[in-house]
Amino acid sequence: MYSSNRIAYWMSDKKLQKINWKEFEKICIKYNFEIFKLDLNKSLESQGPFNVFLHKLTDIIALENQGDPKSSHIIKAVECYISEHPSIIVIDPIPNVRRLLARYQCYSIIHATGLHKYGIFTPNFCEITSYDKEKTIQQLKDANVRYPFICKPLLGHGSKKAHEMCIIFNEKYLKDCRAPCVAQTFINHNAILYKIFVIGQQFYFVERPSLKNFYESDRKTICFASSDISRANSQSSLSVLDPEDISVQEIKPNPKILQKIAETLRLAFEMDLIGIDVVIENSTGKYGIVDVNAYPGYDGFPNLYDALLQCIISKVNNKNQITDCMISNDNPSNIVLNHLNNT
Ligand SMILES: Nc1ncnc2c1ncn2[C@@H]1O[C@H](COP(=O)(O)OP(=O)(O)OP(=O)(O)O)[C@@H](O)[C@H]1O
Ligand SMILES: O=P(O)(O)O[C@H]1[C@H](O)[C@H](O)[C@H](OP(=O)(O)O)[C@@H](OP(=O)(O)O)[C@@H]1O
Ligand SMILES: [Mg+2]
Image 1 (cartoon, protein in one colour):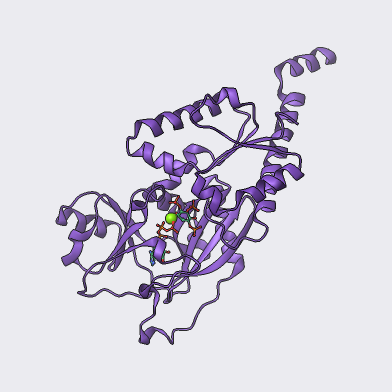
Image 2 (tube, protein in one colour; image 1 turned 45 degrees about the horizontal axis):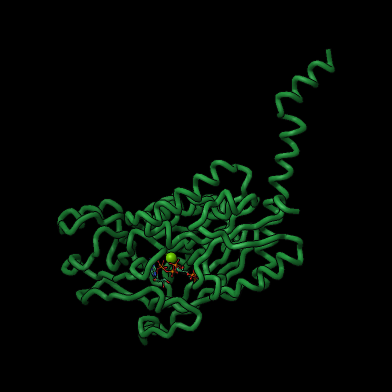
């Protein structure tokens, strides 16, 4: 049991408390898994061996990204340990998490999936790189980003700042774009958002409040913190529909389409723990993917920890099967032996 069923994890204390981690530890013990928190300030070698590494390192990766030497040292040590022990199952691989954290790259990956064949899209987006007005106008035009649009920080996780956004309604207030950022066309969706939570092959979705409908106009920029909008109990004034929008009929989501989104993005991002935020566009009924999150809150996911352990077990089994297969088929010494036996 020692090395084949040993899970190392790392998450911030805030995350551990929020998701009631003690419950997961109990389930692990019940199923004969040893589980322990990795100390990132100590030698990793001395804490091994382990065969699964489960983590939410987004805050540290974000700091590394901003040039913080301590965070960079920690992430390098983790990556180095993983590359020296390639049999470890990492949930999720650090390069894949990095890709998802960068909003521009994240939307580019969604755009490349071919989901548009199923009436699913990611709103037009571009990177705004400077405060040069003419340049910004050109960047928006090239990507067909229309007013109003949302400005989102380039990094999608890891700090309060990553969730500070604004809605820009016209050219006059382009100066409010906090460059560098991603600009994304605003999709009217009657203030309802669906959060799809993915754990390996399992998924679940919940309905959440969202931003009300907005139109191009001469109004001033609206700034908001995304954490005030789409939590289960959020009550932002920005989510209260204007009287003329109240009669717009609610379109219920098709679970098959949400499943298609979950399966496609899990494969596209090569990650098992993701959250996907989807809105249904009022005018077309199409499904717009507006955000993808690494290791989300899973608020409302039934039997969360059974699902998580099931995901881990299936990855461990897959890995063992592949290893068995390699030992019996591909091992060069076996091939030589088989050849010798046949001659
Ligand atoms: N393109 C869009 N059109 C309309 N509304 C949008 C769009 N993008 C985002 N929103 C709204 O803004 C909110 C915040 O956007 P987004 O999810 O990108 O921020 P975030 O900081 O990544 O949020 P999270 O905390 O879920 O990670 C969404 O919950 C949704 O209500
Ligand atoms: O409502 P969800 O679960 O989608 O909310 C996420 C949200 O995506 C935020 O991005 C948070 O991530 P950080 O930026 O890493 O703080 C998540 O926070 P966490 O505390 O659960 O890790 C939310 O769950
Ligand atoms: Mg997000």
